[in-house]
Length: 246
Image 1: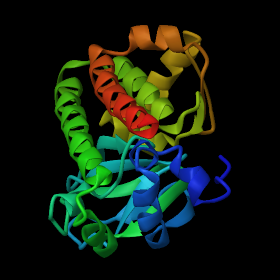
Image 2: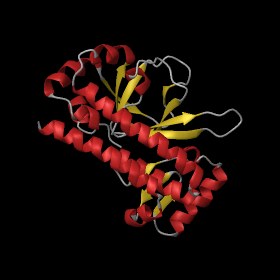
Image 3: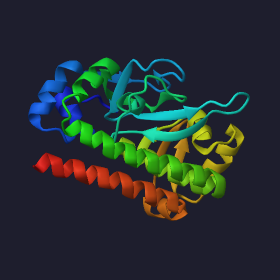
Image 4: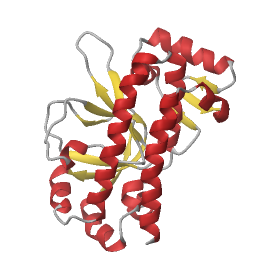
């Protein structure tokens, strides 16, 4: 995907940043940089100090839980609705999970030190991040139940819809490795699951390039978890739009 021309354009794609009043945005802007991130770029590592937070624009981050001897499992996705680096906002310098780029694209980066300092002003971003924490908790808790109770096809449909929401497009690139981490399965199961959805005419999948060809039917296949998480993030999006109008 194309990288937006500048920070002012890029911010409009991120729900948190687009909600900021102009004066707050202008105070924050000098501390930001616009980056074109590639698939598998590391945002931060588990157990190490988080040096930067990122606000995805057209990219999507993947929060991974690495279990020794097992396939890494994705516990949350982070796209244009939020920020990767919530532990910094919560006053913690490290995370037990690592975050890597799942779908390449643009993101806005800020040092953890600058974010902590900026949030001392207790502006709109502070309030928006509190709401984003709530939405993330819903996503994490729903994922736990989903991975325990639902089939690989239901989970795949949910994750593909969530990724499309975060990218803002029905087309994106997603490797088999990430699909396996999304579903908490091995790569062989990924091929079978993607094949079932493709044969049904719901997606087109070739060499990592995914196109959702029938979103309505894909939503019917997805478990109820998608609707629950989607509704929570829609509330965040609606609040951001309301802030922009004020």
